Image (cartoon, rainbow, N blue to C red):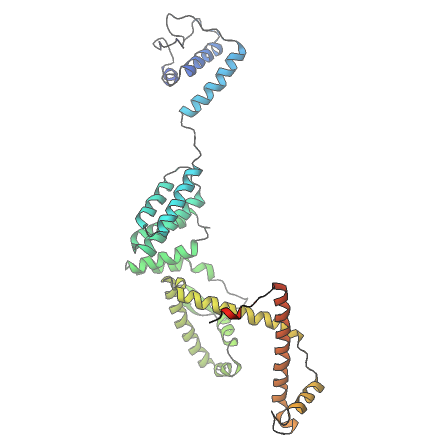
Length: 353
């Protein structure tokens, strides 16, 4: 395109932008000419050059093309989603390979992109804080990133762990007052009474311990043990014991003991037993029916060998328990057989050594 002489352009600002593209220059000049129809001269037409002639169709094509070029030259927002995902994946691989400094560097590169959404930005700050806390024991940096993560996305799924680790970081830094302040800031989450008319019997870190909590704990104890806490003084002692356990529990949480492999194994096994016991109680035991005549017949069948000819009335309670156990075991075996058929269970006893 021959129009290289920009000295005659009265709109110097536009001309400077137009130098980025000859096509853009032509469009700017033509637009100025067609808009300012009262002008005697083409203000942007280069000196001593022949006036360009464009058809309406050509002009439309040039306008659209130039608009796209100018948009690109003005720094339109790019889609960095692919690069962001790449940095995130690489950072995770580096962290798993125990290359923690390199992982943090990748996370920082990810944060440098301006189009990272707040949810991702908050989560990445949390992940950096987690690396500093768990792997590098740099509690100053961990605290800083945990604070950023909470501020960026207060509703993030990591908030509870970030808050807990923030308190632990502050404690390890010797900033006990700041740690206490952070604990108190979270107190409102559990400060409401569980039921109407409930009263507080203690307070830990600003969080009340309610009388209903103590009574619920007592009711979970065996009946014989509950009888030991029927008077006020005994209940007061129990409250003190409860608070002592709560303090130890919170300290363990702040130290991330719940992530200990042994704890996780025991937790998994305990949960498994609890689920099985509850399932058997709900699904199997309702199938066990006890008939009084069947209990007596059970006694007669086992009178000599099991009950040594003792009178029925003297062993009636034991007979009932024994018969109930037999019926429960039979129901359990039948239920397991049914599940085995559904799940197509196979045993390879020869492989057991």
